[in-house]
Image 1 (cartoon, helix red, strand yellow):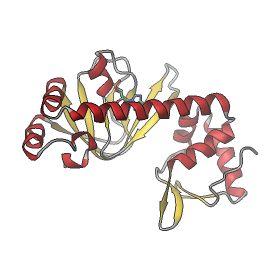
Image 2 (cartoon, rainbow, N blue to C red):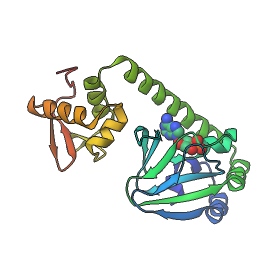
Image 3 (tube, rainbow, N blue to C red):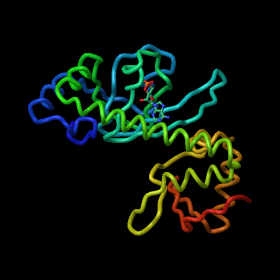
Image 4 (tube, rainbow, N blue to C red):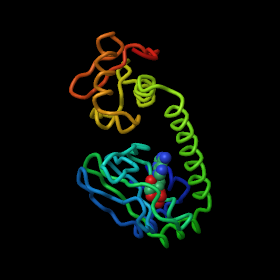
Length: 215
Ligand code: CMP
């Protein structure tokens, strides 16, 4: 199973077997907190199955979702690298299976396959790029544009149709674009009435990949 995680793709069979022994499997139920922003942490998590959301919240329970991660992806590397508290919180959006690597197991990985450091750097660069994009959309686009942009970013082609890969609630979309659920509801309704999208049991299909910029 570890073979499917890009982080470990540089490891040979023997090294992979050692890491498989060092990694502890954890089953997480839907909605459970995996790690909390500000906590000290010394483990890295690879997602075997399921989906998690990475977010920052405030005391009033409001949150901004930074990213949704799925199988093959990893998280928790930042606190391992810079020895600072966790930069964000992570909870499971559905039943999720993780492999947990301690700081020492991660060091063992790096010793056995130094190229893993490049994989981690590449992933950090991609996350910074995505975060830059997010900052620019939050600062420069209106809510309508942010919702449309997010739908397009999450869209994947399935059976010749463009569908939003994640089945998201309106609240989750609102938390991704920094808007209220009511506003997202209005925008999705408008996009739907204008024929740009259709929604069936939370599955959004995009009919026109040039979504309109505003009402
Ligand atoms: P860490 O800071 O240890 O704990 C929270 C984790 O969330 C962090 O490591 C990263 O793995 C992940 N994370 C934080 N910010 C982002 C982001 N913008 N995109 C994707 N993952 C992130």
